[in-house]
Image 1 (cartoon, rainbow, N blue to C red):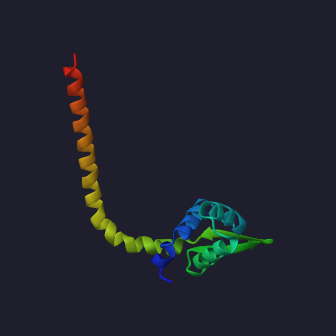
Image 2 (spheres, rainbow, N blue to C red):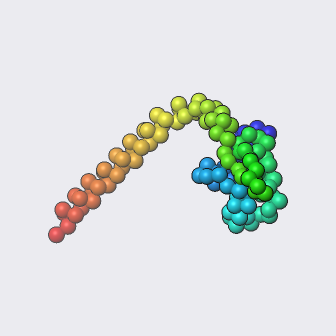
Image 3 (cartoon, rainbow, N blue to C red):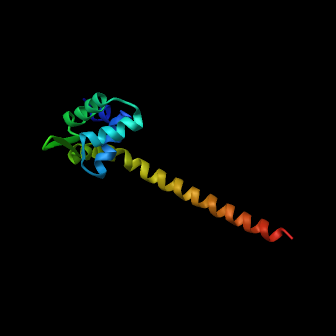
Length: 119
């Protein structure tokens, strides 16, 4: 399965967000995901399996518990692929930020002028 097929699913993206913050047991992941997405434990397990088999997550046993964590290597591959687009996004986003700041300055100036003209 292609990395973007894996990441295209909102449930799997949310699981990765949870695991990026800390290692979690399968039960902890299931509790959050089931509450947020109203899906069953088997469905969450299937998403965890897809993340594990695609290299985005790893699992280790701790007694009877299965502890999941993010595997950064696969995310690094996605990040490297996205870098080619960031090069073109960067200047455009910088220009957008400049225009937003210019608009804010102009509004502040207009507001001050209007306040001074008000008796």
